Image 1 (cartoon, rainbow, N blue to C red):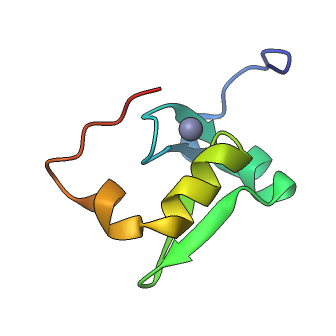
Image 2: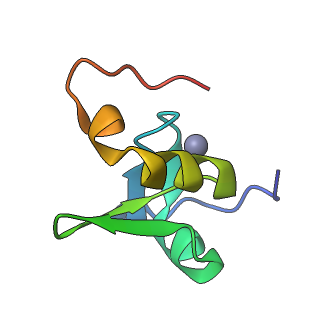
Length: 68
Ligand SMILES: [Zn+2]
């Protein structure tokens, strides 16, 4: 876990794998983003990104419930 900075509300996204709120700038700076069908997704960490890339459809399915 990194230190908690003041959140910048415009740049937040939800990690589709675990449901965490992710700072888009931070995710972009760390390379924790993935593009799928023209949409960029942001992740809290490498694990979530790798899981997503393995099976994007699974995590984007409306019946999928994000969990840690
Ligand atoms: Zn995550």
